[in-house]
Amino acid sequence: MPQKTDEIFSHQFHQNPYDYYKEIRPHQPFTKVKLFSGMESWMAFSYEASEAVLKDPRFIKDMRKVYPDEITDENMPPIASSMLFVDPPDHRRLRNLVQYGFTPKKINALKGRVEEIALEQAELMKGKETVDFIEVYAFPIPIRVICELIGVPEADQMDFQRWSHVLVDVMDPEDHDEAMGEFIVYLENLIEQKKLTPQADLLSDLIRAEEDGDKLSKRELIGVIMLLIVAGHETTVNLIANGLLALLSHPDQLQLLKENPDLMPQAIEELLRYNGPVEFSTDRWASESFTFMGQEIAQGDHVIVSLASADHDPQVFSNPEQLDITREKSPHIAFGKGIHYCLGAPLARLEGDIALRILLQIFPKVSLAVPESELEWRQSIIIRGLKTMFINLK
Ligand code: HEM
Image (cartoon, rainbow, N blue to C red; front, top):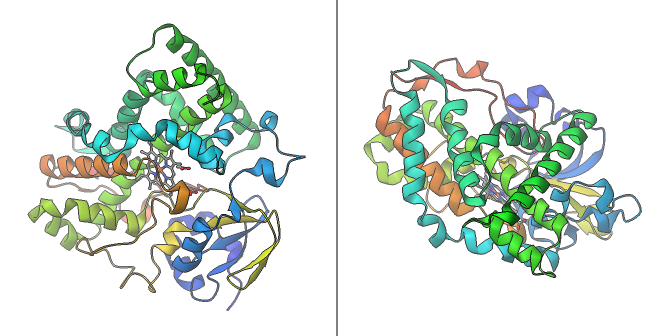
């Protein structure tokens, strides 16, 4: 088997990673790859290896523990102190502070509001022949919902978009630092304003926790808001857009869904598996040296999981390259696994379901306005999403 690992993260790779995964997975289920930065990393490609990495407490998240001399709070943005980038016991403390807002019961109560927002966005498309589906529909719906939940002004969403793209796309380090600086100053000002006029929102609740003293530091408060804004901006948009694309390129499945709208929850699970919005896990680091999947891991080694490759592993999914919205009991890991399992999964599922349901009801003739081969995928280290997606509505 030739070493194919150099191709990963190239422009060509992003255009169709699944062919690459199909070739590498059986031979190199857990192997070293070269990242675009030139850095070497372990990457899990098989389902078995991916699940094992995500559940193994020896692969930790907190870089400050791995490189105490080089990595400190001073040279890392506050998002590095959020739950996604720390380990127990801090992880549990930070997750507990926001968890209550994202339980399935709390999220179900948002159903009516999410429907209103989707209908308003659909209204903006009425009468038009062609639109960029991402700009007008797939992107604004999750943004408006997360902004309302957190209590951040929707009017600032263009800045949020720029700042959050910086965190997940391949980018110049100087632009990265500048954007991070702006994001932090913005949040500091917003927190000061909220302290003066608290409201019934998550940010006001978290500010109270910060003021209580030992539950949440100021840096952690900024970190969690950054994380929620980024998660709200970069993920569900791609469930809605990648999901519609998968349906449009499989007319039999689209027809089946139109005839049986009750299949939508199952279809959402399959769309998450088939071309999910989060292609790679975030970084993990080996806290000690040990043998893992037959490979010698050294302390401090960097590890990533290709969630997309795991979710196409024929050892777990029959006919994995086939979109099948009637697939039963899909154990996909599009939302991750283990203690960092996605906090926003119930919200993402609700938004995906409502957004696609309303779109297909109002625009049953929707079709792609450009050939699929001309669509361009973002060059991201985490996300799988299109730059634009023009559709015909009539
Ligand atoms: C379809 C949409 C989404 C997908 C596919 C997704 C996927 C993921 C994945 C794979 C992880 C784990 C990453 C890792 O272990 O390295 C994660 C974590 C997380 N997600 Fe999501 N996400 C989605 C939507 C959201 C939304 C809307 C929110 C906002 C509330 C959110 C909030 C979070 C948070 C806070 C974590 C960190 C959890 C922890 O560290 O304990 N996600 N997500």
